[in-house]
Structures are given as structure tokens and as C-alpha cells.
Image (cartoon, rainbow, N blue to C red; front, side, top):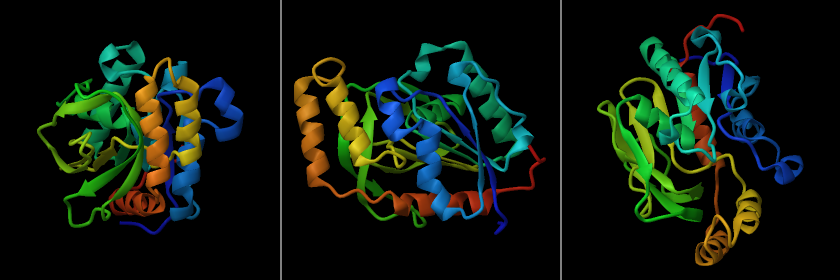
Length: 243
């Protein structure tokens, strides 16, 4: 465990829709805005394999965060296979890694689980997540936007949280890895903007209406998740080679 400022790398697996970029920023920017207040002095570096950028030397950073994506990890794109191989290196080196949505799913696949298109369809809006681990947050609403889910757990993972819609929604591993299906870095305004953008096209009208209503029904506090993730990194970092 360390109290020293951390050197973290955010891996960008998806791009904010261009018409929403100026208002909300990129996914790495959202992640940094969400987590940085809980890690004073931390340095965040972004890499973007989805845009063709290289992955770093695994030893270059204290820890890694994986963003969400519009892609499904079972598409098997070349950059995804490279990311799976990279995750295997992080696991061997015991570098801490935290995954969000697509990051949660590709971590599960990389470590021996399986992600599929969810039989119960889209999850969009705000939903109640419950946790079953002593050091996990208390139950609370979380923001979601996904139609894939982890169906089969990796051998070294245990499910420590989920929702009625997504039972395998939070995974903790026997090595320093943690992941969530929901989006702690999103804001209700961003979910609202995405829902309105895709309403009637990607999202059926009924799903969009239900999602917008859920944002009115639930109050989301992502700060408590940020505190939990910050403590995960502080507890698991090792000395990294300067980037």
C-alpha cells in the first residue's frame, strides 16, 4: 500500500460520439474527472488502441483503467486481441487494473470467462446495484448503457455485486483486478444525451422512455465508487518504471 501519488494509464476502448465530444469530453477525460479527486496528485496518461495507438510497456505505470466501448469484445478485432494479451501480462505482473463496461467484459474474457449478447436486452439509465463483499460500497443506483453481459465467470473471479438486470455486474479477482459493468464515470446528463441521440434507432422507444424515467427516479452517487476504486489502487500498487 502507498500514499505516494500514482501514475495511472487509462486505456481508451471507445470514442464519444462526435456531436457529444465538446460537451462531455472523451471517455478517458470522464474517467479522470471522476477518479482524480480521490487520488490527489495522481498522473493520468491516455492510450487509445481503438484509434490504432499502441499499448504501453506493462511496467510503465502503477495501474491501468479500461474504458467502455460501443464495440462488443466477441467481435475479435485485432486491437482487442492485443488488449487481451496485454491483460495477461498485467495479470502475471500483478499490476492493478480496473475495468468499466466493455473493460469489465474483456477482462472477463481475457481471464477465462465469457461475454455474450444479453438475452434480456438493453440496460440503459439508472439501476440499483447491490454488493456482497465486506469492503465493497453499500447498495446504490448506478448508470448503465449496455446490451452485452458476462455470462460465465473467470475461474479466479468472484461476483461481488450486480443488479436484477445484470447479475454478474461487479467482479473481483484473486489477483489485483476489479471491474464493473456500470459507468461510474458517466453523469446523468450524458446518459440522457446518449439516450436521446439513439432513441428510436439503436434504442427501441420503450427502452429509451424507461431509461429517461429511471434517471428521474434514482439519485446516483458515483463518488463512493471513486473512493472504493482509489483505495483499490492505493492498496495494490507497486513501484513502476517511470513512463
